[in-house]
Length: 114
Image 1 (tube, rainbow, N blue to C red):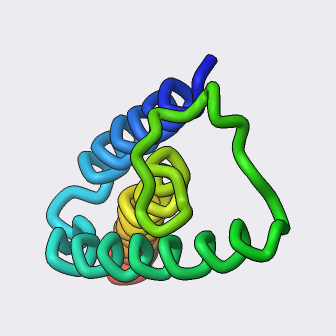
Image 2: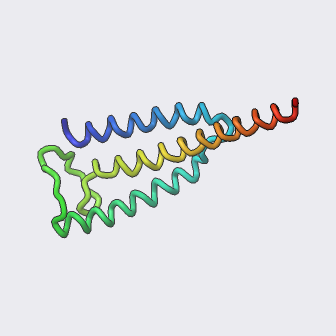
């Protein structure tokens, strides 16, 4: 399996999970603009820091498993993980907040009825 295939599966799973969590969150979904800004920031940070780490020899990739496209010294496949995190974590946060709101709402309804 190449790094690109592994990255595609990872990002695909994160997107599917984010969609499911967004459905659970209902109207309290994560904001697309915030997610987009987060993706841009994480891609820039990944490009900078991975380039530094690769340049200093902290790690390397097997070239036969890479697509061959690089941003700085960082291979394109290396950007899948920050992108997946930037998509998945806000959706998880929104779903958990929606769940907490629902629980608090049920508690207050129960207290009002008694």
